[in-house]
Amino acid sequence: MTQTTSALKSNPTDTQSAATTETRDEKLANLDAEYASYLDNHPDMPSRWLLAQTLLTARERRMMLDMIQFQPGWRVLDAGSGFGQIPLEIAASVPIRAVGVDTDPGNLRVAARVAERLGGTRHLCDGASVELTQASIYDLPIPSNTFDLVICRFVYQHLGDPQCATTELYRVLREGGQLLVMDIDDQFSITYPQNSNALTQLQSAFARLQADNGGDRFVGRKLSGYLAEAGFQIAATMLWPQSAHTSAQDGSASRLFELERLSGARDEIVSRGIMGAHDFDHYVNEYASEDPTGQFSCNAQVIALGRKPALDAGSMKR
Ligand SMILES: C[S@@+](CC[C@H](N)C(=O)[O-])C[C@H]1O[C@@H](n2cnc3c(N)ncnc32)[C@H](O)[C@@H]1O
Picture 1 (tube, rainbow, N blue to C red):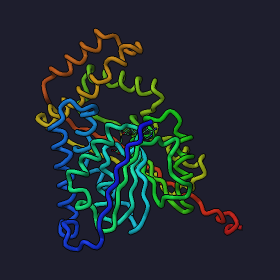
Picture 2: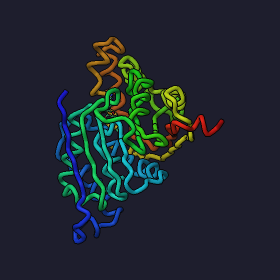
Picture 3: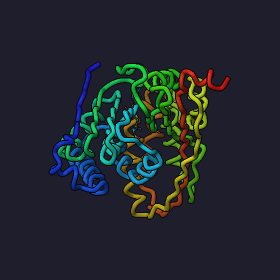
Picture 4: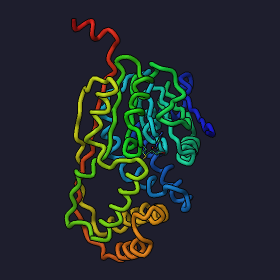
């Protein structure tokens, strides 16, 4: 596998640096602007819809991160870091040492490019560092007992062997360290008015493809079980509900990205026999030509928080 690594480190002695003058909100606004500019300037990039979704969901992501009481000096791993937004966002406000790993070199390149455009170290809080590396969650090039916290968000839904991944995340955590896994469960989804038949058919073909590839769009309910099986003490399980009213105008914008996401999977869906080419194209055309309407939507993601027990936890209980 090609090893793509990029590293950023703030300079704590440079007290005149912009890192000390920009507020966290300004740094996060700069980060969003860089991702948006990347999106605008790369109309043909793969997974464009995913980057758009990452931008659209920035508020929810930050609310989730704000729940965590990051401690200065913590070593934090973001497993399946995508475009690197989680390590870059945390390191903008807390002096942590963040590592992001992902198997997709394209996503890592976007992250490295955005970090570089931000002026690298100027974006980070004094004393923070971010390192992005190509690696699989199943086989991390990281010594055991390294991290205080591991975050793994929207990755388990893609994993063929989530139990094996959980064991590897357990290994790289220090005793007492915590694993926060967050993912979807498609059963927690309501829309009103309901999605059209065309969109429902396309989304269920996409979900079948994900399942065929070893993924699981109902993984949310299973997260705490995977953690318990790997040896974690379950500190908390939570539902993270979201609801929104999408105006007709916003709905047409998000429909473009949804069409991009679904159409990107067309060839695989057709070649695996999940849906015929004629039906797929028919549903895409039908969905693309629907009259835009406002819609209420509501869904919930599941969070499981596990703590790696200290070795002597058993003896202390006795
Ligand atoms: C939906 S994105 C989520 C990105 C990010 N965690 C977030 O919350 O926005 C899923 C990411 O998991 C990565 N991924 C999938 N399987 C992986 C594996 N075995 N090891 C590491 N990363 C993986 C993908 O390349 C992709 O970037």
